Amino acid sequence: MEAEFLPWQNEHARRWLARGDGLAHAWLVYGQSGIGKRQFALGLAASLLCESPKDLIACGKCQACLWVRLDHHPDLMRVRPEAAIIAEGLGGEAEVDGSEKPRQGSSKPSEIIKIDQIRELEPWYHRTTHRAGWRIVVLYPAESMMAEGANALLKALEEPPPNTMFLLVADSPDRLLPTIVSRCQKLMAPVPSVNEALSWLVAQGVSQPEQWLDLAGGAPIKARELAASLAAPYPGWLQDLLQDLAKNRPVAIATVSEEMIKVPATQWLPDLQRLAIDLCLCRAGLAPRYFSGLRDLMHAVAARVPLQSLTRLQADVTKRVALAGHPLNPRLFAQVCLQQITEALS
Image (cartoon, rainbow, N blue to C red):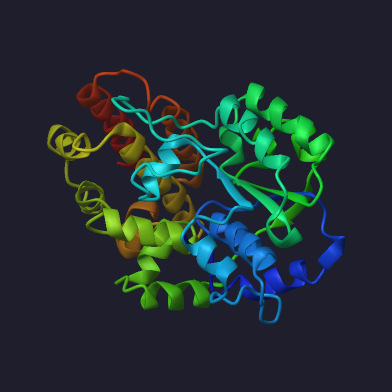
């Protein structure tokens, strides 16, 4: 289990850990997606449970740190959806309490935290803590709790068990029940500087780190994941589309759409949304935010299109993103979206 702080998290963590006995029983760890919030929360938990912390940070060598690393510490409970367990590569091995093993024969792992997972924490609350220390629940992503689960958790937050701390991790606190948020102190996870993020990506062996970081909106964890799962920082069909538009050539919509639909609409539609945002930025004389490797092509296309038309296109594409998960004809849907793009940019 990853419970060591990322390089940009150490100082922020020390300031929080220095509160000592002044720490509240419930914290909402929030911030931009892909910056390492889960690892930050687990690092905080490991440091609180460590038997020989160094400058307030977990030593990584004591018995408690070993248990945390092996995911067997009796006073640390992770609560997350079945899909998260699998995504973390745990092979279905989950905690005895507070989380469930993936169901045998299940067609699709659950992406929500279920009420039973919250209820199963109840007997754990009443056990004696190991060596009279903290008992810590790390719950993520908090937005994946349904109303029933959130209400069950609320009871524990309102009447917290002794020596128990809750660390709820969320990308979007506004998606949580207000009653949950009101019971937690807020802790914003630190965001790395561009140089810190790039240095870390290079150390992780990521090539073209600048382009991947741009594609991830400045989030290094997400950038590493994208670099591991995609062949390039931008899809080939997007480059072909921009090349045709930049040279005033007719766009082969049927051909480009065939390339697009090799991946789900939930993947290529956000790419079109990022393209529309980048074109607006280029038209305003700014650098693109996402597809920096296509900067020259986007400047060439944006230069001849009024900014008002580009902002309208961005709004239209954003509306279509909401349709990405609908059971539409993939080929026809891609062609309609491409037709809209080419008419707006030609």
